[in-house]
Image (cartoon, rainbow, N blue to C red; front, side, top):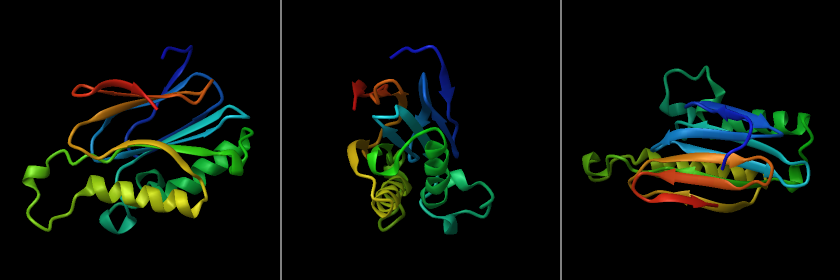
Length: 162
């Protein structure tokens, strides 16, 4: 997917656009929340780091967590024409990058991130229409705002469009 402009979203960050591409690279246990309004052609992407604020000493950045970034992302998308009941979500990431290092009964942050993102989207009544989550490999994500296509790239699995 190539378009004129590409907005890069870093870890614990988000972006909203009406044209071009929104991308985030290097998703491991983090999860990308991709929202799209197909009528207004507004896209949003958040790269969340942790499932809850209780897992972080530094809670100053709301983009770190699904529950605190979602209201901000929705507000910014509405400001440029998105309508809440038209939004659709795609989620990517949540890998267990070092699963062999997790002791029995240990915390799998990737899995917990995916669960937290699903809960936040359900609470906002935004359906998840596609996902590429879990497993043990990293991913990068590219949202084409013109049509809502999400390209997921990984070294291990190649490229696919959600």
